[in-house]
Picture 1 (cartoon, rainbow, N blue to C red):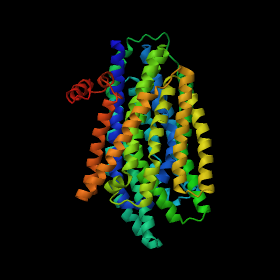
Picture 2 (picture 1 turned 120 degrees about the vertical axis):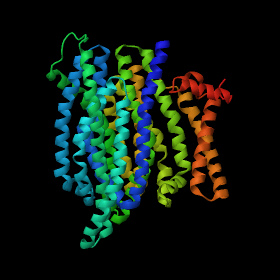
Picture 3 (picture 1 turned 90 degrees about the horizontal axis):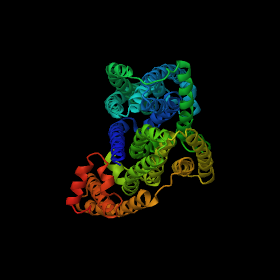
Picture 4 (picture 1 turned 180 degrees about the vertical axis):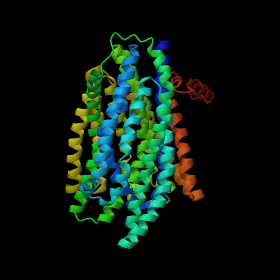
Length: 551
C-alpha cells in the first residue's frame, strides 16, 4: 500500500510538472498572441493559422508520435534492466527522426505554393516557408524528450517547453512587427499594403516557432550529452540477455510509431479538414473572402488559443501516464492499472469542468481583457465552443491511457470513426443550416465527444475499467455550475460598482476558484487521501483543515 501511494504521488508529481510547464507555455502563448494579433489583425491570424495547420499535418506524420513511442519503448526496457537496448532505441529513433524530419521539411518548403493554394490561403506561403525547417528540429527534439520521459522524469521536457515558448514569444512579436512593416511597403507597391503587411507579419510570427524549437533542442541536447556519461556507466550493470539489432529496433519503432502516428494524425487532422471545408464551402456560398479570413482568424487566433490552455494540461497528463501505465500493465497489476486510469481522469476532470464553465460565462469579459475589444461574434464563438474544453481534455487523456495499456490501434479506429461523423456533421451544418464558422465549432465538439465515448468503451473492453461517475463527473459538474452562478453575479456586481472590466474579470475568476475549491471539498469531490497525493499535498491538507473544509 505504501509503495502504491508513493507510485501514485510520483506519477502525479511528474504529471503535474509537465502539466505546469504546458500551462506556463500556453499562458505565454496566450500573452504573446495578444500583441501579435494587434499587429497582424484577424486576417493575419488567419494566414498564420492556415500555415500552421498545414505545417502541423506534416509535423504529425513525421515527428509528433516520436516522444510517445520512444518513451514507451525506453520505459519498457528500463523496467527490465535493459539499458543497452534502451540506448539503442534512442539512437535508432534519432536516425529515423532525421530522415522523416528532413523529408517533411523539404516537402513543406518546395510544396508551399501548391498547399496554400489548395486551402484557399495563398498569402500563407511566406509563413509556411519559414515554418518548414522547424519540422526537422522538432523531430530530433521529440526523440530526446521521449528518452527522458521513458526514464520517468518530465523535468527536461518541462524546462525545454518553457524555454521554447519564451524564445517563441519574444521572437514572434518582434519579427511580426518588423516583417509587417516590410510587407506593408511591398503591398504599397502592389496596391494592398494592409493585406501584405498581415501576410508578412504572420510569417514573422512563425519565425518565433522555428527559433523556439532550436533553443529547446540546444537545451535538451546539452542535457542529453551531459547525462550520457552517467547512463553509459549504468549500462555496465545491464541485465540484458541479448542486445537488440538495429534492424529489430527499426521494426519495433515502426510498429510502435505507426499506430500512434495514425491515431494522432487522424485525431488532429480534423483541423486541416475544417480549414479546407470551411473556406471552400464559404466561398461556394458567396461569402466575401476578407470576411471568411476574419472569422477564421477569430476562431484560431482567439478561441483556440484560449481553450488550448486546459487541453494542454490533458496532453501533459497523457504523456506522463504512458510510462507508468505501461509498467503496471506489463506487470499484470490490474488494480494498479485501474487506479492509474481513475486517478488521471479525476485529476483532469477537476480542472476541465471549471475551465469550461468559466470560459462560457465570462467569454466577452475575457476577450475584452485579453484583446482590448470583444465583438459579438467573437464572444459567441467562445461561449458556444466552451463545451469542447471538456470533451477534448478527456479524449486527449484517454488516447494516452489506451496507448499505455498497449492498445495502440484503438485510438486510431476511434479517431477514424469520429472523423467521418465529424465531416458529415460539418457539411450538414454548413450546407444545410448555413451555420458558417459555428458549424465548425459544433462539429469539433461532436468529434471530441465521439472520441470520449469510443475510448471509454475501449478501456472497458480491454482492461475492464469502469468509470466512477460520481466523483469524476457529477461532483465536479455540480461544483462548476455553482461556481458559474457565483462568477456571473460577481462580475455583474463589480462591473456596476467599478465599471472597469479588468478588475471585474480578475476578481470574478478569483472568486470562482475559491467557490469551486470550497464546494469540491464540502461535497467530498476531493478528500484527504487524494489531496495528499498531489504535489505539496500535506501542506494543502493542513491548510484546508484549518479552514474546516476537511474533516
